[in-house]
Image (cartoon, rainbow, N blue to C red; front, side, top):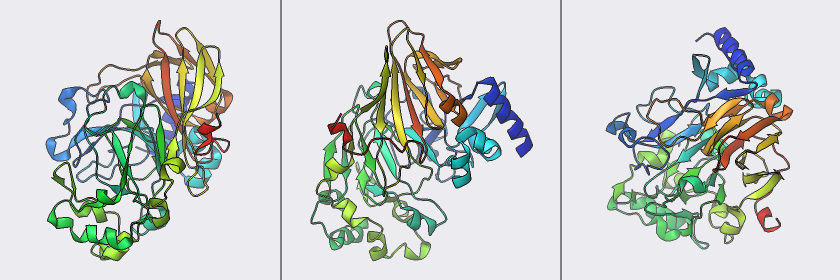
Length: 409
């Protein structure tokens, strides 16, 4: 689509929605995972793309980042704006009208919306893996990926098979220990989890996960604000009796290093992985950011990665029959996890079930100007709270809490 056409359509969508853009559901499969079936996709559609593509266990929000899946079409992972019968990617909209959508400072710095969020919903655990940092990812023409987790209570009525996450490595673990695990890759379970520590996951809490730190996410539905990249390296050879291909370990490493075990081990942040206070230094609990009559806005993702505020997220809860007027420092992607209402005149409703390809009214993008001017969120339900999750890009909330600040609240 010509950039002039997208520019016109984007401007019209901004005007039509008073700075609120409607987004279509954005489903992403993973061929090495087993869907947890809690993110409202209709049961008959979890393999809508074919069993060869894998089950759909992710839904991405306000994404301008393509999914790095084998056999994927070029727009897999990209969110689409839907307005007045028109449909175009948020990526193209930001390229055409970035300053209006995400604010001039962010657009000048990144030339894109550099973050995204998702629901991750798996039946069981996934392999112990890490995401490369920016310097490492640059070696293969990609960007690094720090991320964070929040476990929405509304989607976690059951914990599925393994609601525990392994993080990092036990203090005292050596690089030789990890190297031996890699040497045993084709012998069965390489024992990498024997070197790690599991933490029980609790709905309504979360974690901040820097790059180069190993983690084997458990089976709670996870809301994941993260940097706009899809790089990873999996260090576990078998999970739930399913072999993990060596290719998933080295896919985001230079080709001449695919058999260099020392290089692969050195991709890990050793100090970060063996931190004896890992839980204390990475666990997140909600912190009230603002509240009014019948509503409360809480930080659910916060903290710095290498001293930088890269992303953050809030959970807004509005009681039945109540309105909340909110002002933010910048643009955000929004998903409704409970209730029905409207935001600045645009209808909102959390669906009970979604067919693949069906349009919904549960996801929007709030432009930077609208966020700063303020917007009204109204609960139109009689009994059920309206609950919205929204995430922000880098340097939007410099006054957000630090990890551990929930203890002071």
